[in-house]
Length: 265
Image (cartoon, rainbow, N blue to C red; front, side, top):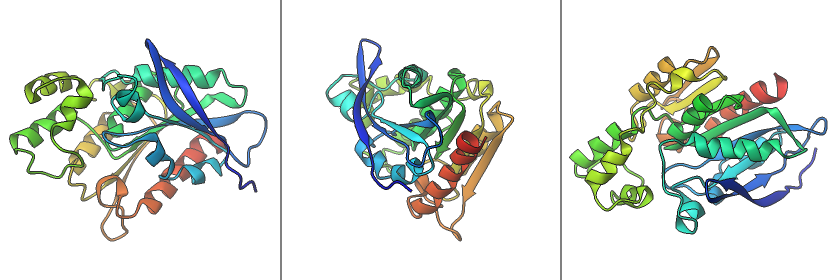
């Protein structure tokens, strides 16, 4: 079994510039081309932090991982001026285009995963980009406009991972009213019905940021014929937002699922 980790610093062509990422090579591969997973971040996570959220374990399963700072996060917004956008499939498709050009990636077995707000990104990508072969929502999002409307109406007296003004910055606006207007299309109803690939929704039963009802709505609406809603309970652990109270359990189950859908399938 290989133990060395090979990471490339990469730039994925995107719109009128590029998105920054890390391509982490699969280990224990069989054959010259291996499956790959595109790993997007969330509202306030960066590609460096994502690496520590299970990537070394995923590559051991024979799966390459392309970790990205997508529009609105990390280096992509700080240094490249790529603001958050509702049509996240533009970024997803750019990543697939880039992966398809590699001679070590199986283009028919490319998955996508993202956590927290990434629970909007990943399903959106998999619904609008048919080349994705599997999708994991690591924490569900159903209606992101409604999520922020609740937060603003409550004067931000609610569970949040960032200050309230963060949403204005990543959307490139100067008021909360303008932010809400920009967030209006950040809804998955009418989108995930188009999804055809296998889909896993992993959500904590006691998530204080996104209610379990949103995860159930996302699962119910998905057009995938192979879909699973995995709810992590307080008794077993993983019941908090993105399984932060027992991330090891959540990661193991999500990566087992990817292995079944991309390696063994």
